[in-house]
Image (cartoon, rainbow, N blue to C red; front, side, top):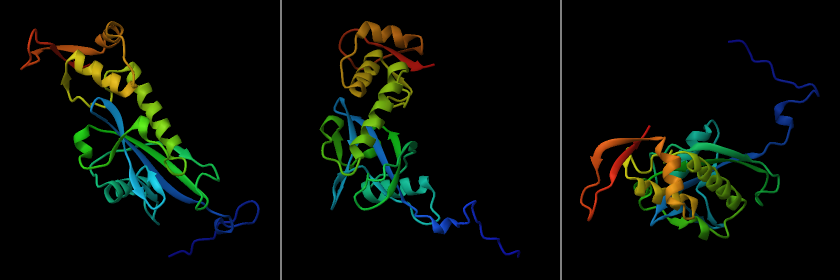
Length: 209
C-alpha cells in the first residue's frame, strides 16, 4: 500500500497545526399539542436545552442527531433536517463549539413521553438554544404561511376546519377564515367523503394536491 503523503497548506502547515473547534448537533423537535406549538426540551446539569450532543469521531452529523434524540429525549424514528450552523466563538461557555442545528416537525404521537413545552414558555435555555429555537419556529411558520400542512401533521385527509386550526396553532395567532380558505383551496383536492360522527352538517374531506 502506498504511504499517504502528509498534507501541507500554502503556509507550510498541517491540518493538525490549526486550533480546531468541537462540533455539536442540537435539534428543535416541534409538534402541536393542545392547540399550540410545543418543543421537546431536556434538562442536564447546565439547565434546560434542546436535545443535542457532541459529534463523536468518525460519526456523521445525522448519526449524532439520531443518537442524541434517542439517548437524551427517548425518541426514535425521526428524520431531522439541517437548519443552520451556529458558529459564534463565544456561543458556548465550555469552549469553542460549533453547533449544526437541526429541525424536525412531527405529530404529537411521535414524541409520546418526551418533555413538551409551549414555545412561548421556553425561557432560560442554555447557550444560544433560544436563538436556535426561534429560527426553527420562524422557518416552520414561513413554510405554513403558503402551503397546506406541508409537514403532513394531519395525515393524508382532513377538513378545512382541522387545517385552519393546525395553521393557527403553528402561527400562534388567529387567521381569517375566509382569507385562509381562498389561499388554501387551490392547493387542495375535494374528496367524495365527509366528516363522520359530528352534530350538524358534516364537513367535506380534502387532501393536498
